[in-house]
Length: 181
Image 1 (cartoon, helix red, strand yellow):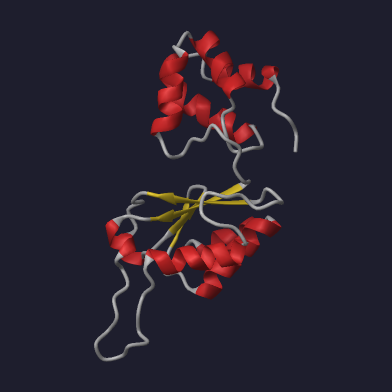
Image 2 (cartoon, rainbow, N blue to C red):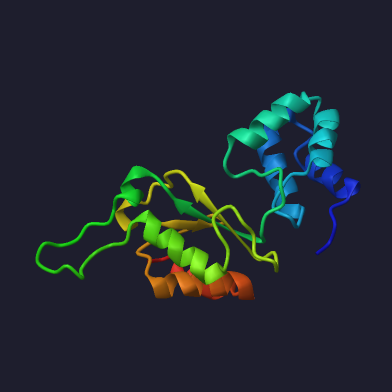
């Protein structure tokens, strides 16, 4: 993993014309370039200096939006929706007790088992982190998980195992094929 340099961070900001109105986009690009899926304090301080934005405002942005982290995370951040529809989506048909959709608690357990970590942790290989997220607007296929910008629904134990394996193996093509469901 390549370490982010001051020159790289300056180049990211200059692509946006050092415009403080582009703070969120700049921070997202810094986070992506970091190799750690986070915006470290030194880069927040540099952005504050160059963009002439108070460090407190940058900290506010980094802590307000769930997409940001100030702490290193895995290469693939898997976010499991904990909104009310996903949490309570465990609806069992009266006719067939086996015909049910899992609730968030089941999906969380599947991801923890497949990744070998608990929520809020990162695998030792740095490939996967598990976190909760709020509603992603895919209640009809919930409970759902979000990996990067893609949403994965209609989850089963096998699909979860495949998602985690794809993240670990770097198999983006298969991962992308699974987001259609």
